Length: 517
Image (cartoon, rainbow, N blue to C red):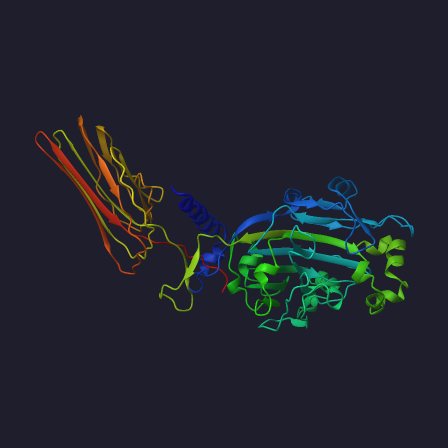
């Protein structure tokens, strides 16, 4: 099997086994919503697996917050990160016990960075609780490994001092990148993404729901944030815990399709911003700082009721550790999905409302002949399939050895083998599955859908023979007809025998996964 076919088999296994068996609600929606824009799960972080998928940034805070970001050992030892005993969630918090001195180090806190970089992807965060309290500045965001903000920054969740709603923002490195309103629920608050303009305000969209940030978020039981980042656009969705949440999001499906998630809260486009070049593959960052350049900025502090508690943000978080007892993330799950390169969305014309996502494999034909001793046998099979195929051009003319195998799912394995000294030729066929594969020494791969049950024969000969195989897959052919594929093998002789096998097959493997309506 080629690597292309292996990838498809893996993806098909995920789609069929996990989606159909573990997520029956997806199959139930089959009548109306085939998948258009598939993303397959890549990384899942829940409970203690956050330690496997994220590193701890043991650094000074680049935003000048009144914190010290600690390493993993310190975070675990001081109970700043831990998995819930049930393993169902992961907690990240700041220290809430130590009174700080004015000139001493900052309050211990945590900044996580994903070990993997992600280009085109979807990330879904199931969040039960976010940090709240005067002086808090929590964020879940993305940026690349180079000097900030050269790779671009995308803020999924960010805010300060309990001021909602949530703001999603883009920051770029001084190049022209501006945003205009598209069809989104949120309100475009600022339009210039340049980090050097407007004190690094960036292109910010304020979400439509007050429950998307702060105490209102926690009171509602939390919710889900989702980001889809491509070279053409960046979108962000939010659903509160009791909203009408897409089934795939709520259940943590292994396959998601953002096309069915409805209108996003945030929709950044590439009309006046080169998203592909401004926003490179990035790490996911989860951090909690205190005060700093935004939460601690004088005018920002004075806009809130926090100013009535203490004149400055810095003084407040130094002297009042107990006020930070609710300054923590409780993350139920963080899932990252990537778009499989083998998939392409095409309109088959079968349903004008829902294009079908397909994976197309090559088609091929082959002929082999041999002479041998006395034997007579006949085997034949036929199948009628509806097919569309694209084939890759290649030509190979190996001599002396030919191998052909055909499999239908996991229950069809007919095999024919001839070498320079034939001892056996075996053909076995049993099919109830929906695909068959043909393999020659040139390694073209074909698959088709059949429910036929061809006969099985076995012939034994003992003689010298010569075998020649020519495989000439056709180049760039496409059909939407309904051909019938017929295979017939005849061996007949008195003192010599001649066997001719000629088969041609074209196929297209189509995956349809049904998700949210």
